[in-house]
Length: 249
Image 1 (spheres, helix red, strand yellow):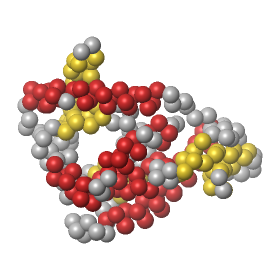
Image 2: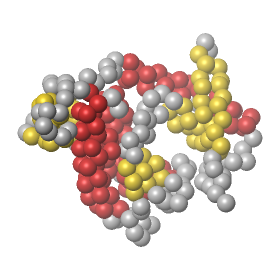
Image 3: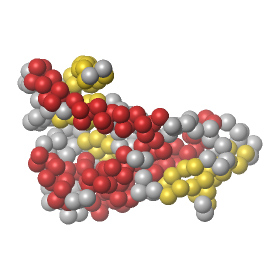
């Protein structure tokens, strides 16, 4: 019988600020210590060993509350100026770290589809409406992601001795995550990641492949990441700074 993760909600005070966080306990994962993550949308997630007393978890969170507050504030600042996309010609789009312009061509007899043409990503649509244009762009990004991720996953996995065969992967649009690795070793990737530069894609792929060896965020996990991508922290920061554009809807 598969044991599902348990998630509970908690709050701690930091001066006049109240910080909410989700505590995840995952019996199927080997979590050796309390690990704290601030997601791109400013949510705070805490992973803890299944048997760790709540008071110990709270003590660990309070110990890092200043760090949490700073990262939450930074995430909110990045998102503060994000405007909803209108899906009209001239809007800025990204692909592999490069900036393109959206060009909308209305053709009543055509089906909605997107193509890259020079400096433009052109969407042909039967009507000037956001829904079919977004659907065409999502389909285009998904197809591009499938091709790019398959190519880069093969390259990144090649020197990793613990990867005997490429793991099963799937694509799933997500609002706060670049990717994840299940306890069974299946990797889920966000197609929107294909908007980012190749080095950022490589970082996310390596991160998830490292979880096949260490399914946690232990010191061993980070040492493995350091060994295979010494500059991963700078690459992660670059990716985090693109959050507002990548997740813009």
